[in-house]
Length: 172
Image (cartoon, rainbow, N blue to C red):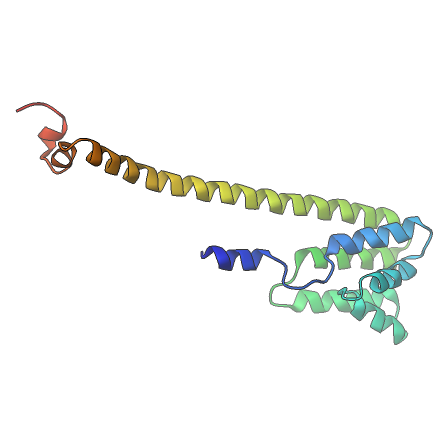
């Protein structure tokens, strides 16, 4: 794959906050005493380009938070290539809105999971880069060694094209 193309694919194309930023913001708001509904509204206010904006539009029309999150989850799941972190975030927030209880525990666990997923993605990228460098080294090293040997000793080219018995370096 073309390195420029790959770099373009790996960089984020929009400047919207990612799911970890959203989860951390909601978690901070919940720990400061806000309800889940208020935390989502504050998060959209803090991150105006957030993908949660559609949920607040549903809230303005009088729908509940759970139904707005479910609608956004259905839209995200119907995409050709859904964002896995976004789907997970919407499911956790929807569960916290429907079940109730202490939503900060759900959102804190979500943030921990998203951090672990981000670390795993970075680790996979690092391992892939290392493997690619190793492949390139193992491809070019024998060629460079052969060229060096040819440049160093004039008998090497004759040895490389000689019959098999001559390659054993047994004198005739």
